[in-house]
Amino acid sequence: MENWDVIYKNNASKLLGICRRYVKDEQLAEDLMHNAFITAINKIKTYSGKGAFEGWLRKIVINTALLYLRESKKMLFSDNEPVEGHLDTTGENEEEETQRKTIENAGFSQQELLEVVELLPEHHKVVFNLYVIDGYTHNEIGEMLNISGGTSKSHLARARKKIQQLLFEKAKLKAEKRG
Image 1 (spheres, rainbow, N blue to C red):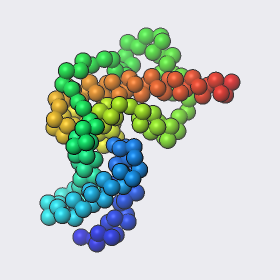
Image 2: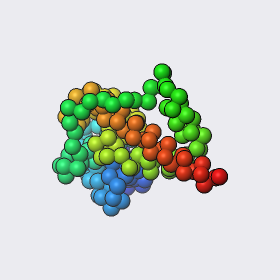
Image 3: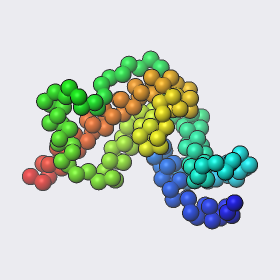
């Protein structure tokens, strides 16, 4: 195994980026990343050598951020939220199609998209990050957050709907500025 100074140097910026997706405060994100490294050092014997070491480290970072959110009660989930719409484009009405095309034509940068995700309510943002960016299934997310897979799907649908709404508003402003 490499030495921890090298591991830190090679992975810190990526792992800090992961923490920043879950918490807005830069200093808090750094603290969580450092806590995750300490956890990894203490749990190195649990790494079996199967799969990428970076993936194992990434899971520890995500779990550290989720633990913080749960313990600080910043993340409230409900199993009673109904699913409201989704971004399935089959059967789109004319207004939805216009909205989608406006968003697609806006040419958003990666930074602009990440800024919109930051505007989501915490519980929707966490599910969005876990599912879309980190690649967890709804059942895995449910286990991590103590909710059902259906609730995870509901939070994702709400997050997508809100992102679509925010991007449409932002796209209209961009179009107005271009004149």
